[in-house]
Length: 169
Image (tube, rainbow, N blue to C red; front, top):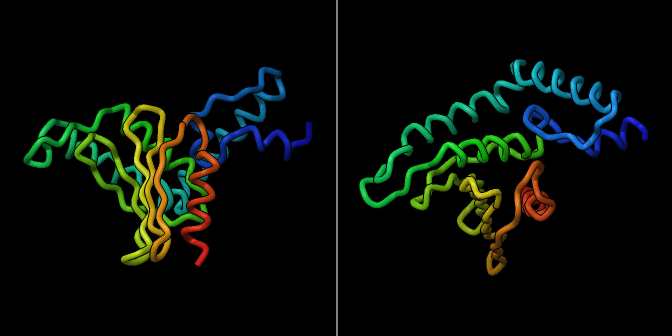
């Protein structure tokens, strides 16, 4: 297995810090350790802080603000620790070419990631700690989509494609 092929089996960026790895050989362990160290150093850099440090802080502040039922003055469900952890994993799995979203609490206890490019160009993905991503988007007049997909260790290909399409223009 070449190094390039091996890297395809490992999450990238911050996702490498929490991922489970399929390899069990000594070499697989070395690659896992190298990728983990690389990710730690990158996150500690100025670029890494802008890309992940500030957004992680924003997610944590959102969690603290909404960790009790009724956080919205009505019937809003609390954001659970599982939801926060899943949101952190989702953040770490976003491609580096994608701008950081706005983080919003949902009355269901989910955390939404929203990208807004205009009245008819909005894309939202949300997690609730259930290992799924719900998504909805307006990609121009009359072009809308929505759905739900499983979310384990990496960003599902359907979401990757939707993000590429959303930021294409």
